[in-house]
View 1 (cartoon, protein in one colour):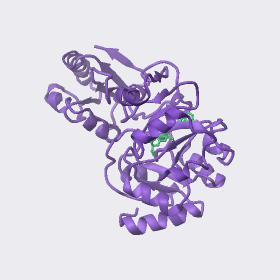
View 2 (cartoon, helix red, strand yellow):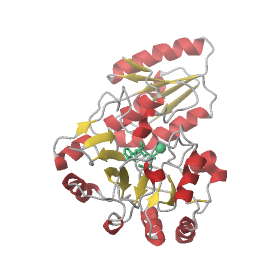
View 3 (spheres, helix red, strand yellow):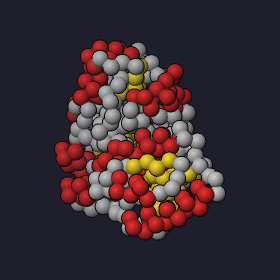
View 4 (tube, protein in one colour):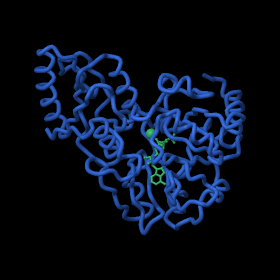
Length: 337
Ligand code: TXA
Ligand code: MG
């Protein structure tokens, strides 16, 4: 693992140009990067993650001049969204150019592009001077990494370099919007919220399956973000969810089961369970987003048989992304309390 930023960026850029894999920080989660023009390097990403080949990657850029080589057309909505939210946690699905290897896009006629807002990611891409294809740097099916240590434990021996820049600021993967079709479609909610998108481009269609139902993006049909123990998600007003989880945790715990509860600071002292972890204050969804994946991983170290997780009552703002990730971790085992 490399922590001296200057040296790490220099080495990382050289490695990318040699076809090696470099895990790097972004403001959302850590990415597992390869030179997007290098098919063999991109193939190593799929191998390292155990990622199905029909799940396309995001190409990361560090300036508009890199966009031209990746896409064949720039729809007007895309331009508006780029102006408003780049650099930042927004990936745009655009018509791809012929130069983009099919492996990057899983054979689709579109490519997802993101200009991240993290100084290390930007310096790395700029230094290498190539777009960097990067999924989240976790093993397929594990929570995305918000710390370099998560990358190390999932992929340590498969990655040529891990650049450590501490805890990721956002904690959830970027918002993904398809702007290659007739109107913008939200495929994955994230820190750029639906409300913010609509302020810029007007109505945005929300793909089905964001909280339940069939998968909207190719990669979203897989069981994702899953902790080892089965997770049950409780949705509703906090008083109801706390009451429901309390009852269930008590009966399982008394029956001798190792029970985990995921809740918020305000309700920490309410539960009898093997492990009770907090996502921070119920009043601060951004904190919950930043902590979610780390806490799911922390549960994995406790040898639990079941996890009962308290969702938030709203899908407004960041609530939609939180509910999406939690319901995926739950494999759609959801109780409306
Ligand atoms: O925040 C992020 O987006 C992180 C950091 C590293 O940038 N990356 C990330 O990549 O989350 P990944 O591969 O874990 O998720 C990419 C998502 C998948 O759900 C994939 O199916 C979707 O974007 N996607 C990529 N290309 C697409 C395309 N051409 N059409 C539709 N969906 C696409
Ligand atoms: Mg991922």
